[in-house]
Image (cartoon, rainbow, N blue to C red; front, side):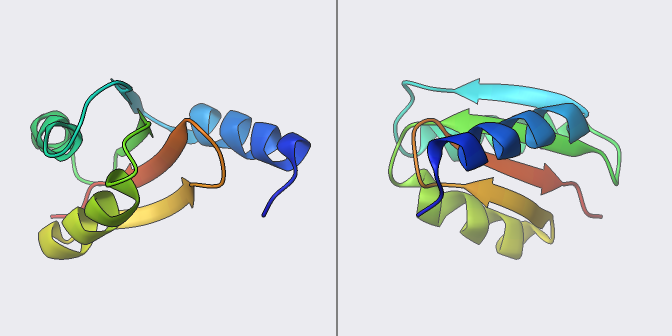
Length: 91
């Protein structure tokens, strides 16, 4: 498990590298993935999306969504809330 300072550094790095951000805090399955899908649909190939979420199911659902839809899960932080996922849009 990462230290609190490591998580804060990772959070700042993820935030700075994202083209767009999505706040999925308070949403429950399947809403976070539905919101990610809608947001990514309006993005260009290669752009990145940072998702903040607090639903434990997102730790499973977002990586699965990326594999299924051919997007790249660049990074994820699931050691503490909010969970964060950085996705790079594929084709």
